Length: 159
Image (cartoon, rainbow, N blue to C red; front, top):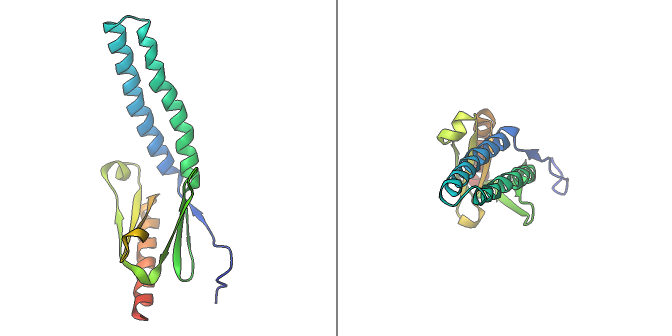
């Protein structure tokens, strides 16, 4: 039997999520940088085109922030519940009791599928404890879904 007071074993998110988010950041802000530079350069003159450096600076800042945010995400499977922790400035820790889970689903949009990623969405009776774990490898997402569903059914049967 596991000790309830033992420190949970945390699992971080795979690096594929960070790569996907950084690529999207570079693509969108890169396009914005080019558009602002061209428009201001053509309409207002080359000096005004320097304002295109603002989205470029935002790209550099966003690159670092995405890394910090990605490192903050982690989850831990305990005996009676699942812990999900995230956040840099505002830390948020969600505790989802297995017996309260009503639905566990694996989702993957077109961009996530392209990068080989999936998310696990947890739905409970109380919307406040709904949770999501983004950016998992599809095999890990399916394993987690199956395990959480099994534990949820076992715990809810005991109610």
